Structures are given as C-alpha cells and as structure tokens.
Image 1 (cartoon, helix red, strand yellow):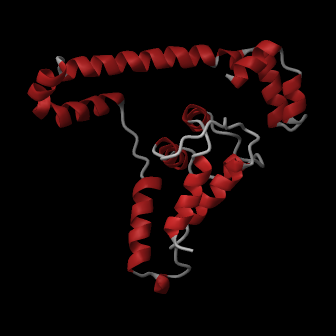
Image 2: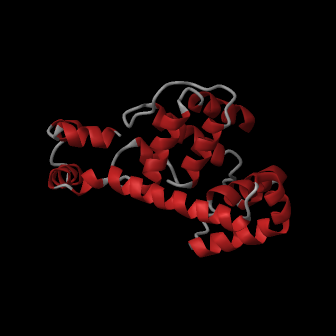
Length: 209
C-alpha cells in the first residue's frame, strides 16, 4: 500500500465531520492538553499541535463536507491517530543503511511540518507582516481601501475579542465544583462519566459548549 492511499484513507475519515465541530474539538485540546498519563486515544498523537493542525487542514480542504459532530468518546479519534502515525512512519528506516532517496525526502517533509514548532512573540509576528506586505501596500490600498496598519489593528482587536470570549467560555473551570470534578478524574477516584453526571446542569452545558 503506497502512502497516497494511506492519506486518502485518513481524508475519508475526517471528511465525515462538520468542520466547526472537528476544528473546534482539536483546537480545544491544543490549548488544554489532556493528562499525558491518561489511557485515552488523544495521547496516541505525537504532537498536540502539528498533528491536530494537519488533521484540521485535511478536513477544511476536503472535497466532501460531512455533518457528523466529533465527540470525546468517538472511536475515530484512535483510528485517526493510528493512521496518521502510519503515514509519519511509512518511509522511516529501521537502520541507517536502509535510507534511500524516497525515505530522505519523506523525512525532510515530515520534519519540516511536524517537528518545526518555532514560537514567536506577537511583536515578531507583526513585524513579519509589515516586512512581507509593505512592498504591496499601494496595491492593497487601491484594491481594498485600507493600509497595513489598519489590518494589524483589526488583527489585534480580533485577538482581544477571542481572548475575552475564551475567558468567558472557560470560566466554569474555575468553580469549586469543577475543581472537585477534575480532582476525582486526575487521581482516578471516580470514572469520568460518573463524576460528570454529578456536575450541575449549568457546568455540564458549559463543558459541552
């Protein structure tokens, strides 16, 4: 089986899901990493950032658009992890003498995406935007009626709105009730489902949202 077929199989799974549900699910776990010691399918992924971004990309650009909602208990999460790991390891040689032209190109492409986690400050990102788009500023103003500074200020406002919205949505996690729930799960005092059923309806709804 060639690697393109493996990628097609992965695409077939992700394309079943509604993009908002799929992207929202994995975006949440980019920020809120699950307990690494937990025996859950999410921990089969090698990277909680690059693997999830890759899957989201496959879903967003899929020719088929599904309507299923992705949930934490869905068995496809484990299948996605297994198939993605197969793709990443497809050309990986067992020993140095097994390296060939294909395996080298494959590994370079994979390392460029999955192992390239360069972090930057917001100021550096803004400076990069200025550097890239300033040479085209006259054309941008002519076509759209605003300049680079306006775009950057809009970006800052969107980020601020996103932070305020996220803080509001996640406020339930700071309640005493949810702290007790989280403690039971982390220390395996009760099952997730049993502990979750004991939460107030308000906190259950907030968690689902």
